Image (cartoon, rainbow, N blue to C red; front, side, top):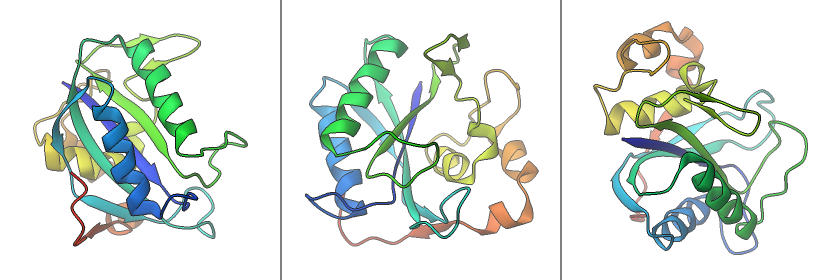
Length: 170
């Protein structure tokens, strides 16, 4: 099982945050990557600066024959196509695609760490994953997703909203 998180908190010249999520999915599918499951859209305050625009995030499960390293190259190209500017860390962005888990593999190289090193601390990652894979176990921590969600602060557990969006993005 390969799990991704896709986020957007800035409009691109092509469309708004919802458009950016939809276009990300479209571009992923064009790369011979099958989208198996997709979560609802979730909205959270921007981290760490809540004064920045709010993020929309979705979790997806994919199937493909690519290596994790090659997937990251694909995701970087998609982010660039959606006008992501890589600047300072945690800055607002039109598109952010994170590889959360790749078949339970553990990898810690200069270019890539899987599972994502902060996935277990982020409400916008955990809630979408729970929706699409309620039995997911963190590969290095060896704990279930419900445990990770319960370990989040009260604020993080409550500072997330499932969006009832009328536009289908899948």
